[in-house]
Image (cartoon, rainbow, N blue to C red):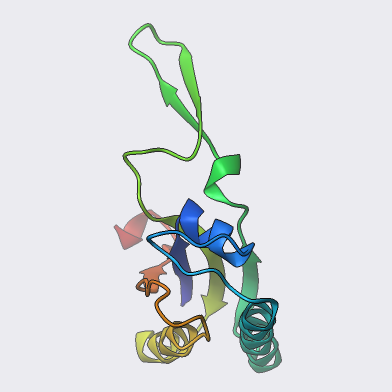
Length: 137
């Protein structure tokens, strides 16, 4: 079965990775950033070797986000991000083909252990099965 495995983050987290601390997240050092990239790269390499990796991507910071909704007049309403009413947004994802929910949960557990600076926020890793067809609802 295919699963979407999602990690979350905030604009403050992206800024912290560029060395700008905030009340929500301490500044990352270059060494901490490289350790995070190496850790995630190792996960991707292992998943690729096992044949479970379908796709994996990190996403651009929320400040580069655009929200498109339908206005009451039937026309698109376009808003640039980040949004004050939204805290965490999707920061990256994997699409995995795993034999079981238990296996994808093991992978998500590994993702939660990614190195980061002391005091950085911990976000849950979200697992969503990907539906194969209309009968999956």
